[in-house]
Length: 68
Image 1 (cartoon, rainbow, N blue to C red):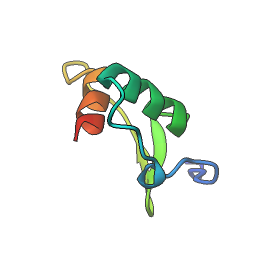
Image 2 (image 1 turned 60 degrees about the vertical axis):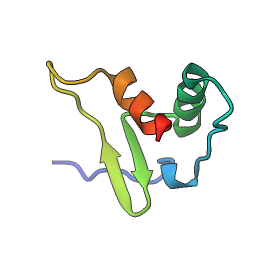
Image 3 (image 1 turned 30 degrees about the horizontal axis):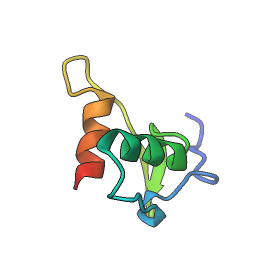
Image 4 (image 1 turned 60 degrees about the horizontal axis):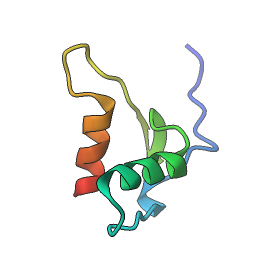
């Protein structure tokens, strides 16, 4: 198993998205800022996203995240 590279990952705790934007625009802005929505940092943690075949869609997960 190769070591996981964490350098260069965006820390989402430092990202703020304008809540006055439409929901679709907030999602687009968030994805643009984190560069890789499947792999990013949140503080000291590295997040690697995976989705199950019958689980929520990527878009649904992101909308829940930016709607909070």
